[in-house]
Amino acid sequence: MSSRSYFLLAVVSRFKLPLWDNISESGEVMTYDKSSLERLIMQMYHDTIRVKSKYHVWKQIINSSKERYDLMNRISPAYFNMTTSALFTDFVISLTKLYDSDSKAAGNLRKLISVAEGISSSVYEEQNNTGISIINTSTLERYKKQLEEQKPILDNLFKWRDKVFAHYDKKYYLDRKRIHSDAQVRYEEIDNLFELLHSILNDFSLALSGTALYPEATDALDIERLFNVIEKHPKLLEEMKQIMVQEIERNSVTKKYEEDITEEEYNRVALLAAGYEISNDPNEGFSIEELMKMIKENPGLEDGED
Image 1 (cartoon, helix red, strand yellow):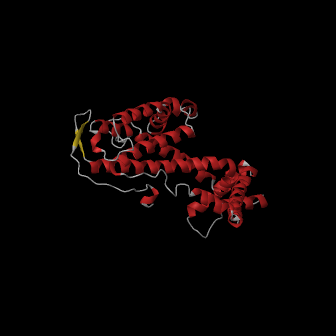
Image 2 (image 1 turned 30 degrees about the horizontal axis):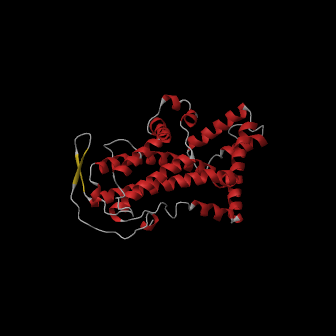
Image 3 (image 1 turned 90 degrees about the vertical axis):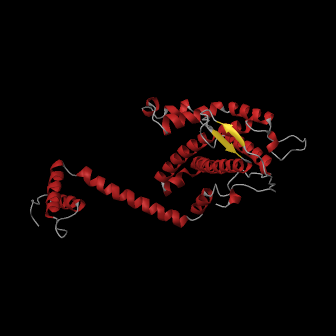
């Protein structure tokens, strides 16, 4: 994916700035300059785009299932079930990293705000029409308030992460459906989290370098093209249908033999099969299905007869 899929670059101004320090709760001194802070912002933004793309693909498959349920079942039901499950797990874990409250962890909004509070607003060069820096004490306080407003959905996401994905909580391990009611996740709430991420990171990027961040990856929903291609090619669908029919028929034949034979016949088949396996001669014996058919057609056949 090209860099244009992640962000739109504006005119970038470069000035040398002094270093500043931020001391973590552990006492470790973290040193930042403008360049390293810009790299942090861009890395967080790339992470945001990646997780947002996974979220959109997951959402697209879930929404498409209402209209294309039969199509997905004809193509590959197991694949789509496993894919949606994996995407949901991935985007929940990745999104909670960006909203983590661990001050020792890198790459989350709370850590970014903490770093910004420890430096002078004069380091941000870009200003709006009022002459006030984009990043200042007022905006940082607004960011913290906005994070608090997202607490209900964040609590639910962290519950999914900590009690289902990262660790097994007994309450949810023995009752898998309970987490869905205890920690509901709604589209609009997730959308709001991504909007807040973009807003804050975009403000920092504009203030530091004049770079406007583009909020979407251009090819995030190429799965829609896949659905369209399949829908418009009935021949391909017919071939897939035939494969599914053959698989079902093959399983049905095996099941039919298993259901029709008596216990005595089954034991004879097992003995004959065992004799074939012990001989280890690929030119001797028959397949299980052939043996079952032989016994059904020749009820008087004795063991050992040709």
